[in-house]
Length: 325
Image (cartoon, rainbow, N blue to C red; front, side):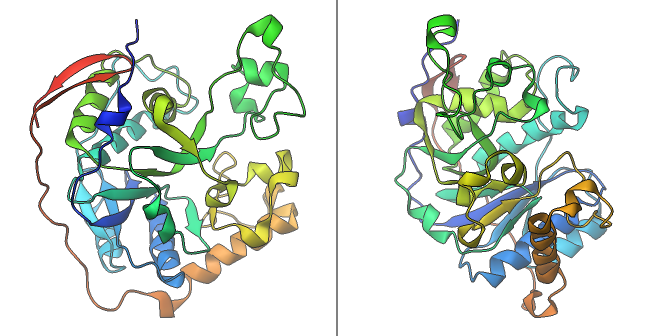
């Protein structure tokens, strides 16, 4: 039986004042282009904080060098795998995403903002670092896509993005599900106690469709606080909830849609490119990526040594762990 997650204590921030953005990269594919674009986007909006890239050992040296040349801080991490196989994931490659849990070990930073490699920043979001400590911040997800067809939310037509359109049938199904976030953009506080508890909980967590996103939603359920859609606009919102989209106010765009919407992959012949708003957002990504004036010109910055914290006994939703840093 799942124990109560005393997240208020495990999320206590370190006293260090340092802050950074962080993203994740695995394999020898083309996602490095997304990270380069992200680094340049953060410079365009004049962020004052660095971009840390957590890379798995299988990221080639020449890809790492491209990121270093753009001023990124490279942090190699070991992969984290859940128990069991990956048959239950929506996509097989989701299995490597559990490695993102290593980011909670980056305790030289007091607070971090995670950004998926397929996001782009179009407005300064440094102010998110000033959100109160002790909570996990992210944007509510949408349940309207077929990838959610396994869920009760999808089957009854309920979506937390527009809960008044189809109300949750409490008389039939009981209380509505708790808020569920999209983990493509989130604000969190690195902490070794939290890190160790995440790994302990993972040992007994079930394999679920959306991998680490489902896991993080359960783990941080008690301390999750939603932030507005402008901080993580997934492209599907343009179709499913246009009434909730104000493109002129959007600060972060998440180029989702089953892989075909990654700006560095589109050919212009994709069905989604028939939409003018999608074409505009893809063009804006390329404008940043191709802007040589946004290239980093002062040389790479290297990461600091990770500091360690004392042993702490804490509780998680899946169980209790006594952690030694």
